[in-house]
Image (tube, rainbow, N blue to C red; front, side, top):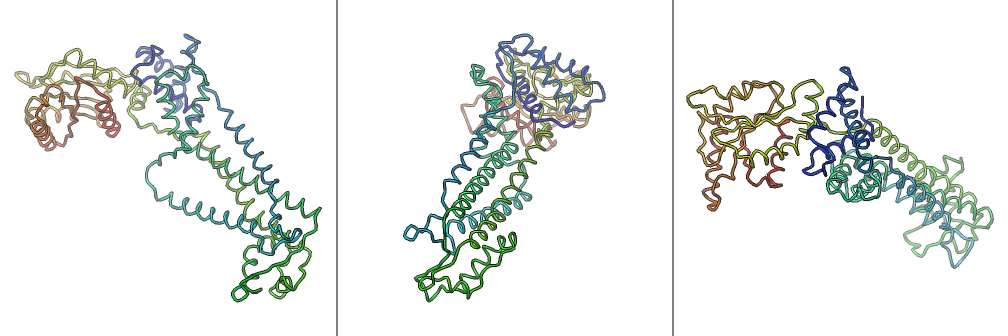
Amino acid sequence: MPLTEHQAQQVTLVRILEQTQNNGSVWSAGDAKEATRAARDLVGTKASFAEFVARRAQWVLEEISRRSPDRAFDLRAPRWPFVAAQVLAAIALLGGFMTDLLATNLMHPGQINVVELPLVLLIIWNLIFFVWFSVKWVLRWFQRGVQAPGPLIELFGKFRASESLGFARKMQRPWLDTFRQDWSHLSGPVNAARLKMAASLASMMFTLGALAHLMYRAAFDHFTAVWKTTLTGSINANRVHEFISCILKPGSWLFNRPIPNAQHIESLRMPPGPGEIAENWIWLYFGSVLVLVVIPRLYLIALNAFARWRMCRNFPLPMNATYFTTLRAAWRGQRIGVSVVPFRYELSPALRSNLSTMLERIYGLAVDITVEQAVLMGDDATDWKKTVNREGHVAVMVIFNLAATAEADAHGALLQALRKAIDNGTPVIPIVDTGAYRQDDPERFRQRCNQWRQTLDKMKFNPLFLDLHKAAADDLKLLNDRLNHDN
């Protein structure tokens, strides 16, 4: 079952809620595990993972609403952007109608040029736009990865997220800023389709308004078609005919009206010619603008409307992060646990708390974090086996002390043994705690880190250096990037 946009928004909100450092006691680890159990019971064993995740997020929000109505998160479909698009289209139509495309010859009212500049520029500008659009569409197939949304799309996404939450005091909760930022990024493609559709609609309505005024003027005013030039040596009737044949060919095809030949155009030159009634020229321009501007814009509206409809019904929410790895294990009925294995290093309560907080912010509150007893591999060289007596680990983290000297037959041997003992695909991540090592000598600190890298690299392991004593935001980002990369 694919996720709808609304379901993906609910999943994202719950993910941020369960990964934030302080959610204001709205939701706890016990609540998260109960939500997982309840969702499994509700969807049954035949449900897809996406259906399970969507139902779990819905259950979480309903449970919060039931417990604390004043803290409820009632995500609603935004209406203001739709209203704004309608208003923009109406203004564009009115603005186009107020634009007099035939009021260019102020010295001689009632005359239009066979090369009517406003209409020609309107056609040429749209042709350039469609060439740019086509090139960009082709280049998109050669781009790798997800492109970051532009500032306008990002701002639009944050506005939609804020309206979904309601413009009220709920916006004061700090972790909701993270939700607005993340949702703005995730909904970038569908919001881009919305903005492109609104822009194309406004452009089309402006053109239709201008054409409506053009026909209104033609119906109640008398216009003659002429042309004149000062550059008689370089511009003649033949060149004018070549140019307007390209511009007016669509109008000629649409209304089955002939484009005057060069001899006829020469007779319209002033002086000395008096011109002719401009009805044929107005119809030719009207048809060409319809074919080259209105119809392509209508195509873009339909194209973006279909893209928006498709993404709203099947939202492209990535589910490869560690948070979803945890829920996928629960969906399969496996234990969702992270085992922390200290090697010859006693973790203080503060270090345990720091590491648990970091892991909860990455995996979510539904994960079980188990900090094992320190492995010594001394008299009992197999004491490490006590750390892998449970099934269903989503990750095993081995904690080393930077103050110790890395040894292949000790530290490397433990990592290799753990890798063989646990399920394939479960990451074994060596974390070297730098907080227990003096850092007043940067050169000595760098040498010690390199010694660890060189030793573990020979065993095909890449150590992660974190200061578990501080557990700063930079350390959290390093751990998050590493876990998501390994998964």
